[in-house]
Image (cartoon, rainbow, N blue to C red; front, side):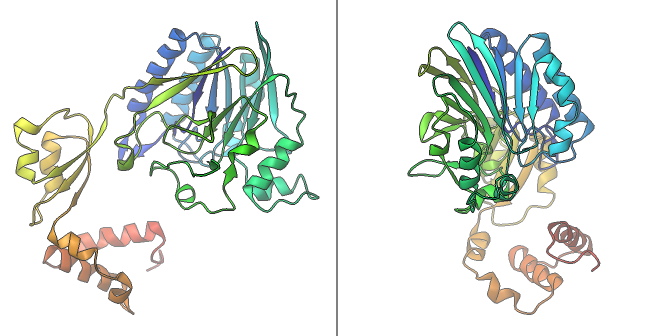
Length: 385
């Protein structure tokens, strides 16, 4: 049996204001071709299907189109919710979907959903564990000691009737750590992942009963603890820290019990994410300009702030997403203790002084207005101010 493992698609994701729907559609077309080439029997989607709890119309349409294409190819689909998904929204229509062999588990109701597939080697049991918190699991197992996510997942699995003589595959969306190391985060995951504490970590040993563990939650493709406990990673680069990541899709071949083959099939995006650094005149020299349609992060080493620098760069690189500076001013700022600067000053005073220090001029009213709006959205200042 051949399985294809996806996770963290984040339908509706944007990159610093750039809509990625076309990029996602492009990469899904590659995956559909891969499914045909590899003769895939089932697709496992390990959560964070959408980028936000209330997805856009374009995002829902893209998921709908993808599922329709899988049904046309007679591919069985197993999908769970992640921490970015709305449980109930993703669960909508799940009973109807099952008639087309699309199985969705987005709400934990005390036990895992499972479905049995069959091939020439016998039965394969697919188990679906949507994203859960320890508090959710406690409701169903009040007599169990559940103080961490690890306790919660162990309790769920120990209370299932898993036949160890059969081949078992689980799909889960959690922060799973190996015996000696945590997984490598990509930077575009939620803050909760990047600052995860001991309570949220789950040991890979929780999943010992399973022949393959299809994980979502971490955007860098990697195995955890053993080769068959694996994060697929996101199919596209969603942050600057993923620039050096090579995106791929795990294709899993199950033969007899204990024989699990894993092939990482590379993906090529419509637009890559790149980072360039140097003086502006050198970076924009025609000799150095390549792949102008890529998403560009730019770090300028010029000492002086350049007026309308974004507009200048977008004439050459229309998909420039961010520009920052690395010069003597910014390096000096890194040495400053911000707690000493703030004191009892207002937000406007702090921003004004910081702006003047970095750029050597006063901030304009329009720029201050933008900073205040950003601070309100981030919850730094009260929206009534």
